[in-house]
Length: 225
Ligand code: DC
Image 1 (spheres, rainbow, N blue to C red):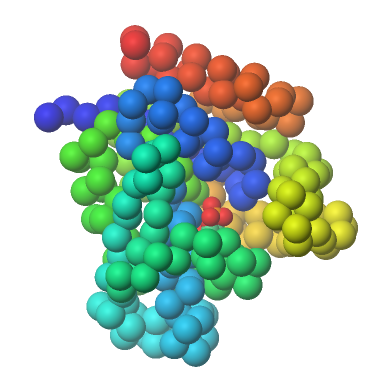
Image 2: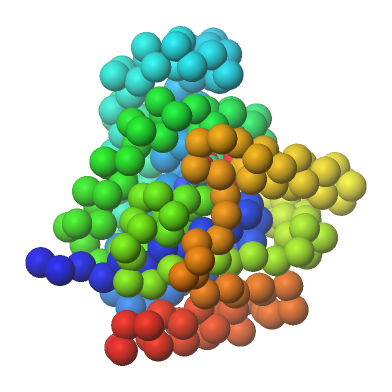
């Protein structure tokens, strides 16, 4: 079957996951959050007390990692690590740092490449990440670079943290976002960048509904749906 592949890349906190998931639900596509996959590797590396910057040590434990993606009734992606549901724990700030560190390792990126491509061969997908349009699915039918200013992303993240009952000062959140942006765009292996043929969607001045409509408009225009 010829599948339709929508690649959404952008910095952390731009609302990629929420928007991609909503767009996938509206179109009946499978939503693949690739950040969750890197986070799961990050979690395993932490649990094994391995330095996430030690490429050889990380490479050694990769064969022990059995990843599984499952979907709940509302289309939410669940991550399983060796049969354990880790969907919540991978969201902890400590795991964000591990995920960012392991995602800079070429051995990890190479290891995950085929898993990601395989998902897009079997299903119409909306896949979000950092290198989907540039490396994972370079011939995706639709590519979107979704972003928002660091300040707006930090504000949104602060609101989210308050809702979760774990508030954090704005300055700290902004600093973390800027650090992760720097790490994700300056690493050697598949750095975050906009593919030349990706549509740019900046949601700084848009609310959720407006962002979703803009996203669906780009997808519809590019796929003639
Ligand atoms: O989107 P996220 O914050 O859940 O991603 C976690 C980390 O994984 C982030 O630091 C960047 C990295 N990542 C990546 O390098 N490539 C992807 N396709 C997705 C995420």
